[in-house]
Length: 199
Length: 243
Image (cartoon, rainbow over all chains, first blue to last red; front, side, top):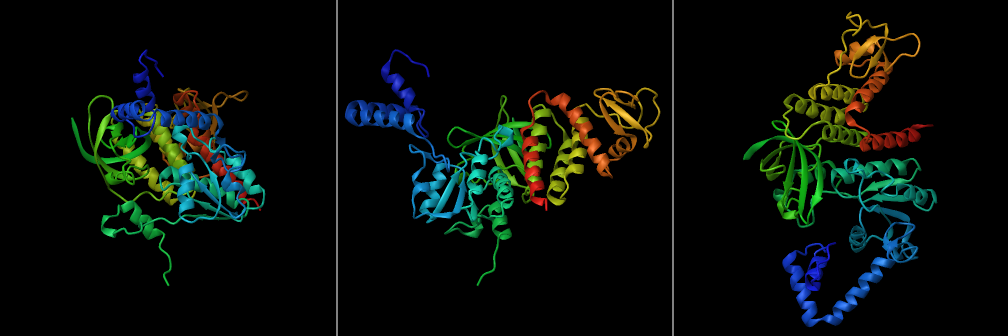
């Protein structure tokens, strides 16, 4: 990062590293903090430093955490026989909000050979160790609904099947409250292929 | 310059800024083209579901400078239903195109070959033959077609029961008895490659070695990431099928 000899401009530039923050918003934030909330800004600076220095990955599921084993893995009430494989930490919270009660494995990405991301980068050896521990009875593949996400799901499903563990893939199709007329054809194709008996 | 909607395949996409995509496409009329999809990742754009590899799309863009700007994208066909090894093979084909074609060089015939190989990867369980034939056509398209019909030393037609040595950049000649150079390959395999129908395990194996040698010359030192992924996948699959 370039440092000018103007602290305000440096601050504006630094703020722009955040998603959704362009030059204008960065300037607004900088002036707001300087004029109205220096205390809040000091607190934020401290929290940022602490978080950046201390947060790493859970040794079991690769979730972001400052502990060796994250809360999701250590909570007793979570079902250890269910393992949900997701792409990002944000997906963990989304699945958790959806009422999922098992454990997680966070890939921190998806297989994307053209970007040079292969099985090693996703920590699949770590996943293999977890599967070999014998506790898991079902693996739920909740990778994104993109070609790369599907590829990742197929790759992992082979790993899981080799160990005689049940594999499932989250269902996909019409979103809740969706009207068929307005749904894109790819989604509808998937919904049609994944139809099930209705009773 | 505005490019009107026509058949294209997406080869690869990469997130760009907050909501945009960098898209690499294979166009029927313009070959490999790089585009920026402004706002393509926004849900309201409705493009995220469409701008995916392995689906025949109708794409329009405006060309200015090195990267064009995506104007519209529509589905031309349902997505090619690739699963498992088919997906891995699909990425391999895309990586070959990305590495071997220059941008903005039209390859209309190769585009049809590409569409065909995608359908085959979805339909058949053994992808080897489809991949080999595509590789041959790809080499031909970029100007490095293989000599398959005659011995480059004697000039005589290739005979099925002879063993040949295929030296890179040159072609096949009768294999030296001691220390043959290049890839050793039976005449029958060369003939089968020429008529685009590989019949036996032996021909498939020899064709693979030959094409790996020839592609390798143009791919440079950087290994193909999709090839190692494909191999890792097949290895798992094989360990699964063992009794």
